Length: 112
Image 1 (cartoon, rainbow, N blue to C red):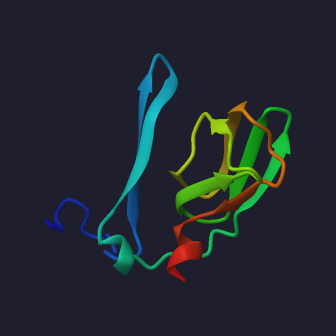
Image 2: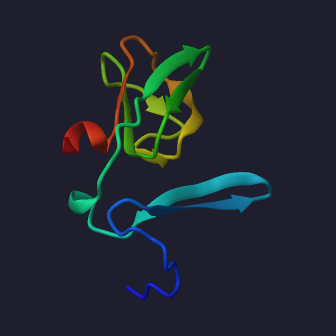
Image 3: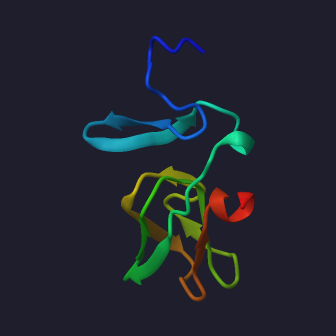
């Protein structure tokens, strides 16, 4: 990797996020690590999840990779799932199914 592009990047701790907008709406987003995921030093994002009507609100205190939302029956359809997110909040719409027994985890929960 050419460190001249991002000379201060820490290869196992930093990442880049991106979003593609179309007419003001995000149509694609994600993140890129500077190392293989197995070498990346994930920090516990302390994920929290709550439901407001037909939306699931996910809160994170740090970068969270591969966020997964499940319900009790694992039978729902969401507007987004298995996504990366920065610290903050993300809202996901429930398109079908219900949020009974909703759980959330990220790659941090698997890698640690």
